[in-house]
Image 1 (tube, helix red, strand yellow):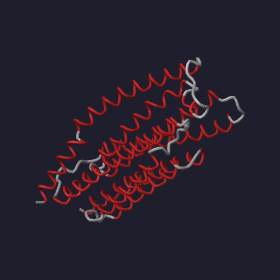
Image 2: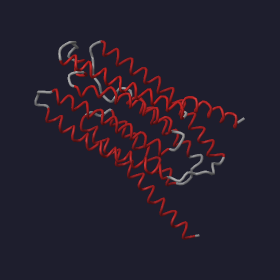
Image 3: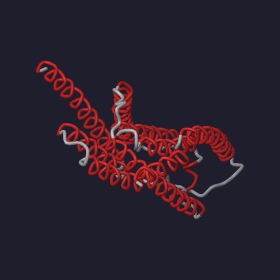
Image 4: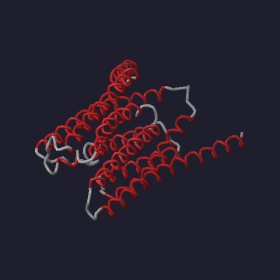
Length: 298
């Protein structure tokens, strides 16, 4: 009976989160990003030559040609979230690394938007904007390095070919969680898009990273904690449990950073990247020492 349930979960996972679905969705997102970029650029062009008129609040989306980059990056971010959900059953480290990749792209999108605002601004507030821009660039470097570090470690990790029954069950539980998270993702994305579109039609064109990502990362943290609790059934090694707890702490900081504006958000992003990298590096160093001591004792 348990084997049948696992087969059902695997079938559903392959149907909605499998490799073929992911490849098709990737092609669709790339094409949508190109079309979205061209369409947004056209609107910016028409606005610059006063061929179309927007309200004062909405015009912030079209008053610089750099604003057109916001659309393709938003589409790529939506795809990366889908990729994140796919990685949940693979490994906890892989999932956390993907979260840092998403936040890195999110910070890049904020930097591009801030550059477009500076480009269009004629006020004395440019100095404050440049200070915030500098801090966000530092945060981007730290987050980018962290994402690459996680990706490199996961790529070089030894694959355990001897999957036992407990590991198979754990992976099946994470696939069930991924399928549930995919449903939540679609619901939250539709809600965020509809509320933002309605506000845009009402003349409010404000854009910030809290749209969708604040709600989704709140739910994602709950999923990370649930995975951590489930892992207690199969992992008794303190170093792995402490490492995964440290990873969850770094994602909580990421979530707080999303809701924090300006320099404070950039500092929190930097802190989360430093914490995640330090925890991963500590796990690698002490893991090697433990293996070395084990070999010597043999």
